[in-house]
Image 1 (cartoon, rainbow, N blue to C red):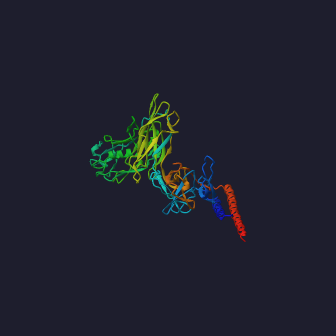
Image 2 (spheres, rainbow, N blue to C red; image 1 turned 45 degrees about the vertical axis):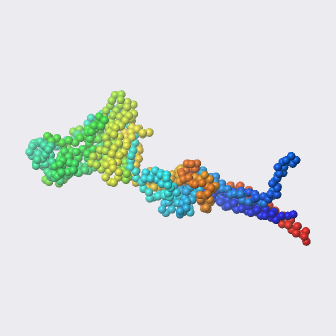
Image 3 (cartoon, one colour; image 1 turned 60 degrees about the vertical axis):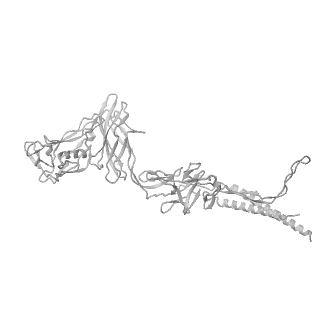
Length: 587
């Protein structure tokens, strides 16, 4: 006798196969959706009608199995395929794909979402956002461009607005110093025509105030026992120094003002000729300090007994001074002469030497030119050579142009051995960090300063860090999600890092549409980390993950679902026919 139960059994078949077609249709519709994860539906039988639970074997029978009749099918589960889809390059810098496990983290309003869709863009405030406007979350950087992995924040990529300047910390040098050159013996020597007073030739040091001595004006000897014009003016007289060259390089223009009033750091009674001598030593970059047993020998001196001003330059031909009487101009000197010094050069500088110029930057990106000179000071048989270096700069914001002094030693094979005082320091008065301290390296990697026999010495700065002002021009995304920014000054800095979320059960996430997921009851809590940590995959910049739908498998499943639907409808049709036959019996 036909049963209405068969109708409902067939109906369940129609229902589950219809839902299977829904899943298949959704997969096929999203075959070109970026980051889409395909789904499959699994069938399960419904409860069965039990007519007998069966019997166990005994002495006389072998036992019987349960007697049950099923009531159709139902949806057992839907399962999401979380395997990685194919990765395709796009060349768009804001695109990023995940190869492996993990999710991007975004925020839309107050809601946190997770997604595999990496088609990001920048909005008008340079925030990195999804196409739907959700902000991409990541780790920020501190003031030193170091990633701080703690709480995550919306990522900002300020292309065209972020600026960066960096102070120089290191300079590397390369070259060869001619070990067979002449050892330095003297610097250039310039002597001025002698001063005297109308009270006599001797100029007591204790009375050498301003431009007069004990009330007597200074005069210049004419060499024949007479005198030339007085060097007058007293307080307020200014001597301008300009046009002096050292090794062919102009040292700039500097002023010195004599004053009868006390000056901080000068003589308690006012400036003196001794103060002027100190001024000349500083602005001419002359130094006789003994460093490592060596001295460059530069010195300005004034002989009170003879009235002669002597300028002795630093040793080494690259330090040779060129100065003339016209380089010293006096103003506000009353009726005195305007060229107080008449110099005569009595000695040229000697000694093997070489000079190179390079640029460093302070913390505000200001370029500063530094001159570095090496002078051969000692040759030791079997033990190599010793050179003294002097670093000087007209951009130093202190009076002294010398910013560094030291020695460098080489062994008998011409190889670098050691350096003393291998840093230089520059005062800054422009608001930058002061002093600027720079480390010099004479032997690092492929950059080596040597001391072999050669026709000449050569030296060059091959590397210096630091940079002038630059603007963020572009960025790229690394495998760990770092946003590496490129600046117009050639610097590269990390400006952020894209964060990733890891779940213990990806299939437990709740699909909220648009390629986004919500944390579900069975997904586990999100672990916030970076790419390649805790089993997460790597990020690929300039690429996107495609849908992982297998179109051929979907077509086969569609055929099976269609067949199952048709077959279930046949069950309903057959049952209906049987019921009709039963009703005919009663007619």
